[in-house]
Image 1 (spheres, rainbow, N blue to C red):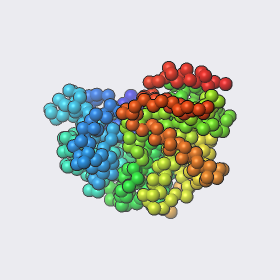
Image 2: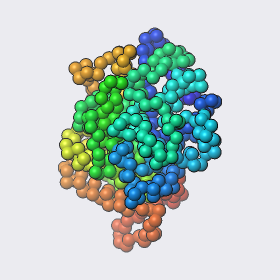
Image 3: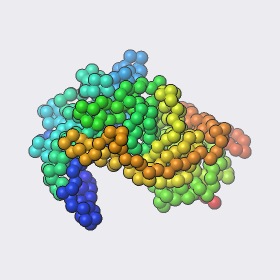
Image 4: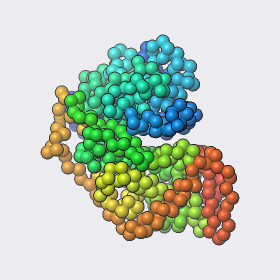
Length: 493
C-alpha cells in the first residue's frame, strides 16, 4: 500500500502547486489490474502471500487438474456461467493454488481470518480503515474475472465455489461500479468518498465513452485488451473470446456486458527486447529502429512468453522468431515485434466481428504504446480500418474518475447521452491495400502454428535452402537469452 499512499500524497502536492484547493476533491475512483489475486489476514492487515499476477503461469498444473474434473475435460465447462475458460489467467485458479500450496493461507481460512480480493478490494479495504472497519468489497467488473461470479445472476455462485472448493465467506461484497463504497480514513483526503471502482479494461471502455452497443476500444499496455460493448445482454463467443461484465454505473442502473479479446504480451515484448536482449537502451528506440527499415524482411515474431491467450487459450505455446535470413538485422526484429502486436489485435478483431455479426468500422485505442506513431499506422494497415487515438491517452484513469463523479451522492456530472464530453482524437488511415495486409497476416498465422505445443513437440530439424526458417524456442523471458544474443551479434549491421 505504500505506493498507493505515495501516489495520493504526490497528487495532493501537485494540486497545491497548481493552486487547487484540496478541499475541492469530491471523490476518489479506483481502477486496478484485474485477476491479480491477494489473500490477507483481517486481524493483522498483512498479506499472507505475495500477490499472484494475471500473467503468472505457476498455476498450470492446477488448471490441468481442474479441467480433468470437467465432463469431457472441457476447459469451457463453466463458460455458460462465467463467460470464461478455465485458465491460469483468472482469480479462482490462483486462489485454489494458494489454498493448496501456502500453509498460512489455509490456516487463516480455517480460523476465519482470511479475506480474498483482487487489487481493488485490497486498496479499498485499506483506504477505508483496514483492520478498523475497512470495507471489503469489489465491483461487478472485477468480480466477473474471478470465475466465481455468475454473470447472469450477478452474484457469487455456490456451484462455482464448490467446483473450485473456495469458501464463500472469504469473498468480498459485490457492488456496482459507481456508488459510495466508503470514505478515506486518513491522509490529506480523509473524509472524501471512494465512489468509483472498475477493472482497468472496463475503466478504459468507460473513459473512451463506449456506452453504446457495438462501440469498442483496444488498450495497449503490458498486454492488449480489446473490448466491445454488447449492451445489456451477454453475448457468448464461439471464436475464443471472453464474455465479461463491462460496468454497472450505479446501484439501480442496468449492467452492461462486453466481448473481450485478451493478448498476454504486447508492450511486454518491447521491454523484453530492451531488458533481456539489450537491443536498445530505451523503449522509444524500438520505434526509431523499426522506422529505419519499414519492413520485417519476412521475419515474424510470436511473443507467446506466457502461452497464447485469445483466441487460442493455449498455455503450451511459447515464443518464436522465424523467417530469419542472413540479411535480417535488429531493425527488422524491432519491426517484427511491433507488427506482432498488430497481428494479435487483428486475430481478436476478426473473432469479434464474427461473434457480433457487425464488423467494426474503426478502432478506438489507448494505453502507453499508443504514443508510438509507427505502431498506430501499422495497426491501421493490418486491420484495414481507421485507428482513432485520443489526444489524452490515460483513458483508464479517466474512466475511474467518470464512475466516481457520477455516483449517487457525488453527482459531479451526468452520464446521460446529451451530457457526455467530446474527446479530441487523431485518426490513422490504412495506407496499404487489403491484399498486402492479408498476405502478411497469413504468414504470421503460419508462425503461430509453429509456436503451438512446444512443451510436447519433438525437436524440429532446420529446413534446407538459402532462405531457411530458423525457429528459436523462448521457453520464458529468461531462457534462450545467451543463444539469442549470439544470433543478435551476427545480425547487427
